[in-house]
Length: 501
Image 1 (cartoon, rainbow, N blue to C red):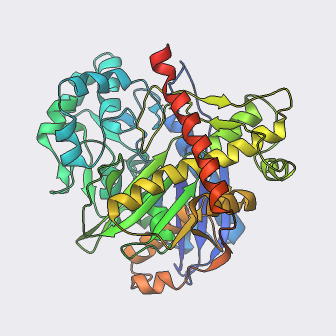
Image 2 (image 1 turned 180 degrees about the vertical axis):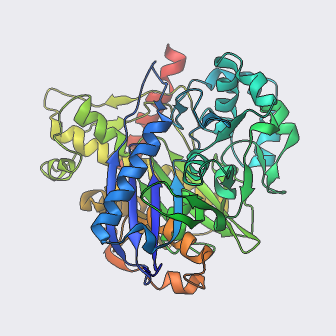
Image 3 (image 1 turned 45 degrees about the horizontal axis):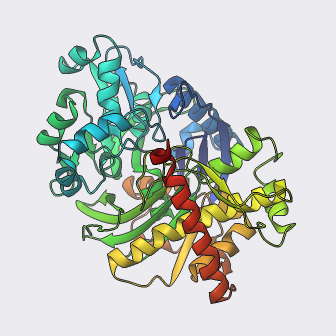
């Protein structure tokens, strides 16, 4: 019989699914990846096919297990991390989705948020959930689906339909439909969870028109949530023991287990989280208070600032304008020019997130001249990622009342040395890149290993986190202030689009 000494971590993201196999020492011994299509039926609308989500997870998992030369019987636990606010509703009886998934980036429910804001309910929502009233979150997406699909609302009220963020959908599929649950970190992203009680809030459910019968159970982020039903690449009975939203999983995977530690993940979007421990810090500057994870009966909280478009801006330069052959090419292009030639690129394709929260801002490029080249645009796109992160960090430091000594970075774009150095320069803070930058999947794996008893303590996990490179600020203070001032002016141009049109 094969000994179960490995953890399979499934990271289902916006543009693809990644799987890692970790050995008993927490080392990555196998990887797999599958790209996920996105659909854009109308301007500002973004969708996924839930069955394609599942298919890419299966493809990535099979590849990772094959690369590790680990049979399914050697897996001790499965961890899941996911794009968080993306909303799926499916039939309980058949497991068939009633509509494509509504992706976190989608702005179709912005008018619904406006109507609720006009009713004066945003202070209540903010106080209960720690979130702002925005189309980003799941609450209004669920309501839209139940109203847009004929008969769905009545079926939901009869208990025939199930809602889930992607973690719940994958858990349902892995367990053969036996378990309908989400973890506390994902639940805290729906606009429906009361942070004080850790449970669904009846007043919020009524406000957003969401029947309680459609909701999953809320479980711990680390602990056995269910067992596999034998999907083909795993045997029956493997515990699914880790669940967390992607950004919370990255915080855990970066060993930011103590209050005051922060990380930034560069993916499709860009997300900066600060561990605040057992304290729910309310933001006065447009940040979110969120559950980082729940384990051992205790809840850890975080302050979060989300940038909607980061790596996706490079994808647009590649696929939309076709001026990049690959996102990786952006670094060499950026280094080929000494600066952007005065160009600023605000990639507000789906509005602006923290700390601006402007649903109607739109992408803007300012400072173009006849001398502007694709190299200037590539550099401006990378600088925009760093500038948006500074917007968030300034608000975070002010809310938390502390000075950050370092920023731990991860995600695909963290491999870009130019971006990491520019980030350190514009923040005037050291940027630390770990040896493994796939810390989102790593965090899910660590939560699962702890939940299944493969590892026993946070210290045992934290010892596995190592720094590969440290980027030290080198930009003169005057230049830093001048460059950031230009960025702030460009953002105001992007925000004025709605009022001008």
